[in-house]
Image (cartoon, rainbow, N blue to C red; front, top):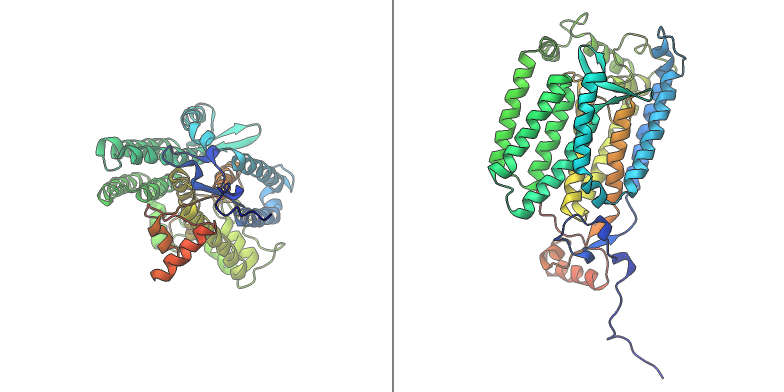
Length: 436
């Protein structure tokens, strides 16, 4: 005898399982998340950029080793170790539950403050500033840890203010943000003399605050205060004034203050359309300062030309596009703000580095993410991307009528199509309430 089970209560499909390990807000319903395959393009693009950086460092490693009493492969070997550690951090953070990461915020803040003190006491002095500390033969730059900590703290802070309805409060929201900015200015600009990293931190905080819904007037107030502080720090520091003057007229003093800018432009121009090749090029032989770090994009242009450097820029553009898509589809507000912070971090740093090398921005002394030589930057950027990769596994699912209508192209047909998708249990992306 045939039986019909149309009216029996069906079990939820496994793709819409409870993702309680990744819930970061009590207001999020357990069944609101859908787990699926992560965005593997994050891995592919990161590996492509890492390989590009390794090839460039390999090509200039013998030139960098000249006169330093180290082997010709010294720099490429250290870069390979840094990549290995960074990939390990990527894997670790891609499997760590978000609730564990969020609950570790206070511990990470204290660890960051301790590292700031240790750098001042035990750090290595470079040009009168203490930015690095040696850990197991590897230089550790605290500014990279500060960027990661700021993103994690601010994501949790803004979510808590949204939950209690005090996002517009001056005492509860604006003053703590200004206090953190002042502390960053004291540590990063004052103690470590790292103006570029301070600009990146400001960009991170401003972008995340705007995306969370901080009123425009308060953001304008923060911008004005920060602008005044940045102008004062430039005016009172001779070498920063020289950098601004060099940016305005880069060829006016190529033998002194404008030396790095001029050599960077020479390297970029000498690459032509297709580049000089991996085995050719002379800028790394003592002509271009910081060829492996701050100036590495000029070396990329010299080796691979306009075509190769454009391909590198294209990889960054695709990475940013994928992260923006993750932001629109992410499962909860904490995750959304975290990805926004990481996007602001990597994109700002990329724009500053490339812009400085082609004469569009003043020199800031900041690395190119995933390509420049340096272990600390690689490890923390890859750790942050590991969190982004994990977040890309989860998509918010909503049956809200308006979100369903917005998912289509418009009109009653779209409402019908969205309703049909919900009936078929296909993924439906809830409309984001933030500004991003």
